[in-house]
Image: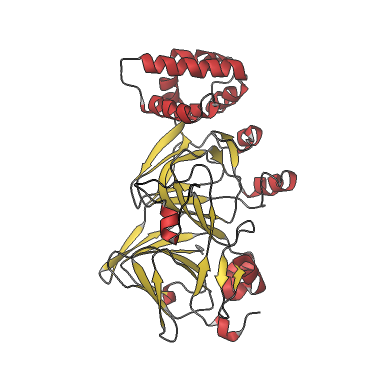
Length: 403
């Protein structure tokens, strides 16, 4: 159990870990990667892909304790789950339910989906090297800058309209026409094509599209772009299968488990179930698991889901609340507005100062500066305190469970 003194503290500094995946932002003379800039770190030559804030066992954030030491968040929560998580969340599971990230990408991520709860348990048990935890993965991405993504299947009619306009794709379509004329069969036949005819088809399509005088379709353009990064990869053909989604800053895309997607470019705040399970099927040097993707993806689910925030005026600022259709997480953006802990009773709150500068006011009235790029955690037992903007243009992102 934590001490009474600790249980009454309003805020603890939180230090997240960084993932340097190949698709992340790289430093240049003109630009500093967003995550490096937030953390005020020298970027070097490595890519900056994700900042993790949470309690996932593979990269738990460090909680700065009152005595000056730092401890992993997963251990701190496990020792006193009710005090940190709140009674209702702790009754469900004695660990933080969500993982909060800043995600930045300058190159396409893999074609992927995430498992549901039942599949996650099975996959972790049989292939823990690929699926590091037994948790499902539901997620939301909220754009900080213009963000490009692929999400959800297009309608079969629209897919065929674009594919049939490219003669080079005839081998794929011919194979499909010998089976069930469904979207699932179209995807299955794509993966059934052997390597030599597949590469010949892809090369032929590139030559055909580049030789055309008429304007290419949006799917054609994306296919050509993906082929430059991943030549010969059948994942490039998902440019025809998935919807292209363009998010303006503040717009949000929700992805349920078993939904195919691939982020393309941009920066955003991401929140998800506390999981790192990814079922990959292309556009990646990492291990792919096509069989699992074909078994778990929901082919009868076309389109995608945008989450419109509830906007409330507040003391000269505004509050944007993103309530995704899940109990695992909820995100709130405070734009020049005050976050009162009394408005978030009996829940752990994890928050990041994205822009400007905030000040933290604890239960005793003590004021602590919270500069841009700092992250903090509020245990559920802290019932008094505020997070205030201390300069114009301040944005604080707050994450909690959605009970």
